Image (cartoon, rainbow, N blue to C red; front, side):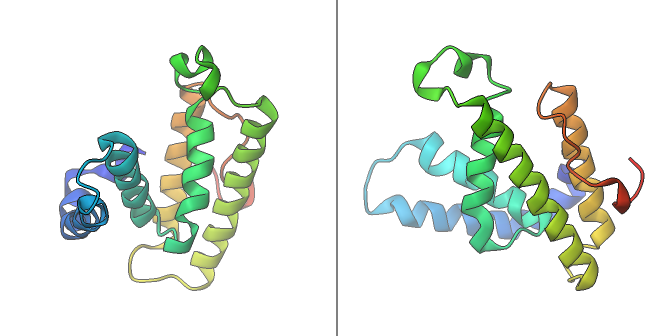
Length: 151
């Protein structure tokens, strides 16, 4: 995933990141106080990653849910804290659903590529993310099917 955050890519996305930050802060400004991690940092990172991958706004909540479940497999403290434990079957299901979602997204982008990115860049980013997850000991299922090209 780090290749998706090269200085050039981030610089190009900077105006949009500023808009996202402003939107999140505006949403919480009336409350006066809010949790910086759960109400700001987490939504910011999910939204920016969705922007980079071309995930439609209406799918962000699903992506966020799947990501949160899968992230638990990478955090050693979550395995110890009862409130953060997730059923292994639920985590496996999240990985399968996320993989299926990206397979469909890739197919849609190939059929109707937009100006934000070529389908090949999306495939490359998904493969990079999948490789990072494998190195970290995350889900073993291929995030991108073989028919979309070699790893």
